[in-house]
Image (cartoon, rainbow, N blue to C red; front, side, top):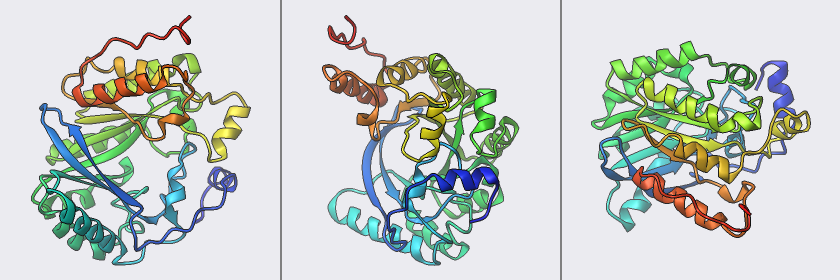
Length: 316
């Protein structure tokens, strides 16, 4: 994969990729998820294997789950088909199908055009379908896929942060005007917008991390986002460790994640949740950490603020 000097530096700091089989999904999970109208639906997320995203964001750790080169034709269809067969054999069909491929669904290196009709057919029984995409690849291919499925399409887009300095340093090749155009395109064509927001983005001062995460969620909500997920930035890709050594990155804490979610619960038309993946990696207190995570999990489900967890150890 070619790219800029920044791209090459970021990739050069990575550890070797694990072996990835493009014909087998990494896994799947069925979870309850709250929607903006208050409904609780069951969502099946399929973690697909395929081509790496070309944008090479500085904070990304999803490259580990991708292959070198383009996704083979037919591979995504087989992955989805195999997972659906397993799920249908063991439980009632979920309401929503989420296809997360650690890249961009509308990048034809990641999801070959030949697979799209078959994927649409597999997605036909679901009331809602979610795929992920960089804002720059939201356009006619998204509209084409939306028109192929009976259910409503939701596109998950990484807004990350609206902090001007940090946003310019993420190597994401995204500005707010591009995000706004994608948001308007989705709304104008009866598609939903889901947004990923970073907590602790590099170049955001640690003492401002919560404020900028909340402001970014509010920005997305003002542009019609139906759902926003606050994701704590994780190290481990080499580039984040380099930035930390230079004083440009401080790993976010569990307490900051709590504060960020609490700061967004006033939003009534956008479901806001804290991403709980790998939460054990966040700095926290051994005495109250599990209770705090339990509180986040309940607030994700209900959208209702709960009192903060009291702890004589970390709040003494």
